[in-house]
Amino acid sequence: MVVRVLIALLALVALPGAFVSAQDYPGKPVRIVVPTSPGGVNDVVTRLVAPKLSEALGRPVFVENHPPTVRGTALVAKAAPDGYTLLSIFDNFPIIQILYRDVPYDARKDFSPVCLVVRNPMIVAVPADLGVKDLKDFLQLARSRSASFNYGTAGAGTSSHLTVELFKRTTGIEVQAVHYKGAGPAVGDLLGARVQLMIAAFGTLSAHVRSGKVTPLAVTSLERLALLPNVPAMAEVYPGFESRGWQGMVAPAGTPSEIVARVNADMGRALRAPDVKRTLEGQAYEIVGSPPQVLGELINAEYQKWERVIREQRITLD
Image (cartoon, rainbow, N blue to C red; front, side, top):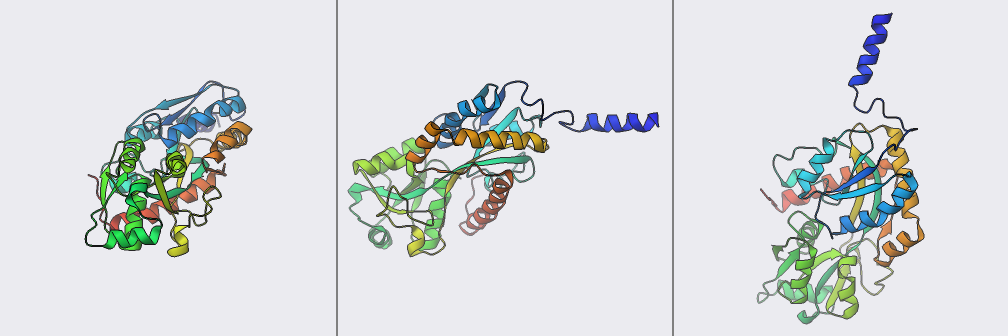
């Protein structure tokens, strides 16, 4: 009998996080790893929400940037599954392992989904100097033999890259990718008409849309945006077309479900804070604050969707 008890205790000790108690959590500061450089959409949303999450948890919450994406993500995959190290993810999280060889983690197996935080609509945008007024005009110009167009991205493998590849496959146009290190330089060249197309989060381009320097041709959500009621959805012309950026949070696989539930609930409280809500909605973010399983389903669905696009468009980054 004593031997059996000892064996059972040893088995518990061997389980990662076995003695992590949700009742005692959190007993120390929590860190959220952002696997990108400061200033990007993922970083901005995380830093906006972190102080409110800290208030809800009753402990400090520190945001740490650990680029590049693969290295920062691998850091969390290897962390103790105790709820004290979380990972802020965005829309390329499920597809990195398709684009690159030797990624040291599996996005669908090595993490526990915590919460889908926000979705952010994207807009199809061109420089105002291009002189086109709508999507039809742009497609006609892009298809003409005299037009040789480039499109700007925030980086290879980002949603601003893959969404244009989906756009190309859907519309039949040919435009060449110019990859930048972040959205800022890409937007700068869009304003200067050195690239003729960009598909990016509305918040990234909203100021330039308001100033008239950028012309929005379409939105990539299934429905029009309340902030851009006169700009059609791509789905109105190409039924079923949809691509939205998103941001979520995961923990290392094996994190106790009670701790995941606690962080999920407190993230919901943080997102409902009036100042957070006002800031996000002002940039057309859709506040979600979903249950963990919703994020898990999204990760699987996005993997399948973009794997098909990547294979068909023969996109390789290695």
